[in-house]
Length: 159
Image 1 (cartoon, helix red, strand yellow):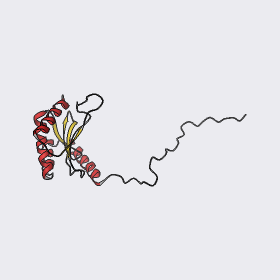
Image 2: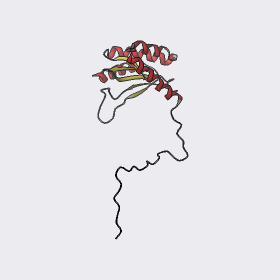
Image 3: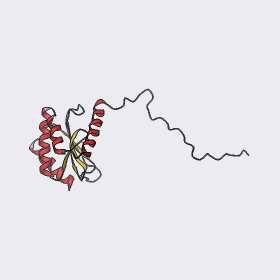
Image 4: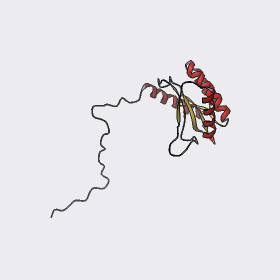
């Protein structure tokens, strides 16, 4: 009978590639790289205790007209619905935080060249309902009905 050799401890096997054959990774897009650069600037500014509201308002003011109008209205709705939230930039987007953690954010359509702006919530938002709930909304215009719904969601998110 042949004698079996024990397996060597601590020997690592090479990982199999998960890359699809013939499909090279293109890496991050220019928009994604830009967002990461902005995030690094934001972290440096936060270390220096920069004024978050001033930065958010400046970012909104720099947006193209349709997104700028949405951003200004959202800012007012969020401030009125949850005054405890602190405005700050997050990956170059206006965002609102509670205890330093992002609760909600506004992404302009121009940010990633999409056909609509996005209003979203992070996992820190208290919106859990059952096993499925919305965390981001496409936003093309902001009527009184949408404003009321957003205000209610923001209040719930920080409750």
